[in-house]
Image (cartoon, rainbow, N blue to C red; front, side, top):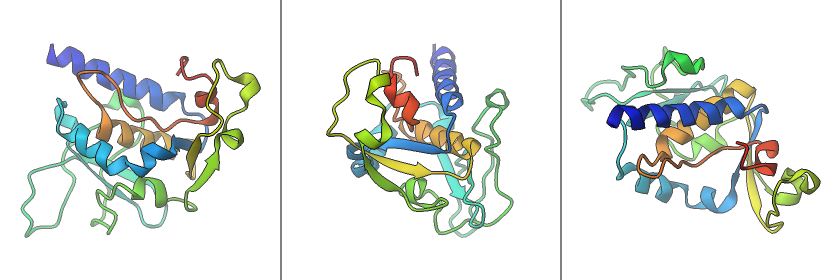
Length: 187
C-alpha cells in the first residue's frame, strides 16, 4: 500500500512538472503569504521518505539542487547524499558540487532567488479569461517567479511539490503557468 501511494505521488508530481512549458510560473498570493505555515503543516503529515529533502541554489546560475536530507552532524559541512528524484523524471535535480550557500533550505528563496525578483500581478495580467474553462475570480493576485529556463521552472515546481505533498489526500501546492491556470482541470 505504501509503495502504491508513493508511486502515485511521484507520478502526479512528474505529470505536473512536465506540463510546465514556460519559464514564468505563478502561485496564488495568499498561498505565498502563508507558505511557511503550509510547509510546516505538510511536514507533520503522512509522507514518503524522499520528502525529507534539502535544497540549495547555485549562486551564479540560480539553479536549484535537491536531495534527500541525510542525518547531519552539525560539526561537519552539510552535504547531499541520496537522489530524491527518480531517473524516470528526466530532470537534472542532482547534488551540487559545492558547499552550501546562505539559501540552503530557505523557503522564500524558492520565490526570490532567481533571475529577477518575483512580482505580484492581478489575475487579469496572468489569465486570458476568454480561454478559461471555468469562471475565475478576477480579484485574485498571483506571485510571478521568472526562472531562467523551462527546466529550472520544472525543478522549482518539483521542490515545491515535495515540500507540500499530502499523501492522504494526494494534493500539493503547485507552481503553474498562465495556460495551466486557464484550464485547471486539464493540468
